[in-house]
Length: 468
Ligand code: ADP
Ligand code: MG
Image (cartoon, rainbow, N blue to C red; front, side, top):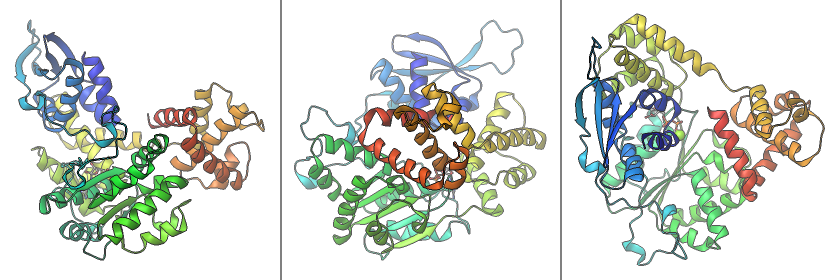
């Protein structure tokens, strides 16, 4: 049972978090619907309860039904010849969390029997689950020079949604710098200040999938109507709409409607509008109507504050020296900063060590090194060739056989997405082709993902392989 729960959990959290917090756990026994799991220390137990209770709940409920219970055994801290391996048994403190709970199904999961999932009767009385994560709020979004403009503009938008000139409000910046956090924070704050407003957070990717589903079900109009009900629409990672002309077109339509009706639109992107590729010009020009704010890399001082914020949140203390060391060495982005602090805490707890500067050095250096293993064009080609069980040379060859050409195009597409190589350099590395070929490949892949289910599956599989 626990294995299946773990599989489910793995699919729903980041790899790093899974490795840190779930791999060290073990199922001990199952009594009726109570599952006992063993965790390495009390710290683990507290962490799991604090951060993953919702996820654990849904995993267990799936396996054992609504009455499921989770109990923790904490591994003895001193292993001096113990016969009984587990000393304490702690019930999940969030007991109600494992009770059946009224959870509003996100609308893509609504009853498939309904002929038309987008038609919602009684227009204004509907409840749309906002899909917000309240752990991402303004209180725990650390302010610094790198994000000050975005943060304060976000606050204004949340206070007076649809009424400021920041409409749309577009936040852009590199990965792991806090775009998604800020996007949720805006939504969460709107909900607090204006409980009557309908807020929806959605990633551009899911938005696009929903749209394609709607098209398949011949429910395009209902899709549009659904989105027209929203007061504050937050779409994350709109660069994902690149090349998806159908989705762009419907978004354009929805955007215009919302904007005209003084509803708020909040968008995030990993690129500045000028650098967005394959986004229709009329849509790009709409983005300029409001405010575009960049989140930059956090400077040292902000990094220190972010670390302190995490420590404070989790009630852990570390010396100034250790904090300084982490902040000076983990510079890439906030996600990695967080990751390294968390692995340090986990390591310390796991081995019953104190966090001193030596431990910090070991953990942080390893962490930074692991992260630096960025994807290369070479690794991407190999992964794709492996996936299709073809030789790397064949993939690079001039063969025009459909499956080989498609594999090659996928390699180019992912190389463009996941590396910083230019189109020309990607082309040169994949069988000596020119930049136009790579550009064409990217477009073809985007189109195929939209139109060809089987192909889409390939792309998704490879994406997962690449992210491992
Ligand atoms: P992005 O969407 O830009 O890739 P995220 O919003 O997912 O980045 O941020 C990555 C992680 O870093 C999240 O856990 C987020 O809570 C945290 N984070 C980012 N910026 C800040 C900040 N200014 N203060 C506190 N936490 C932050
Ligand atoms: Mg994000």
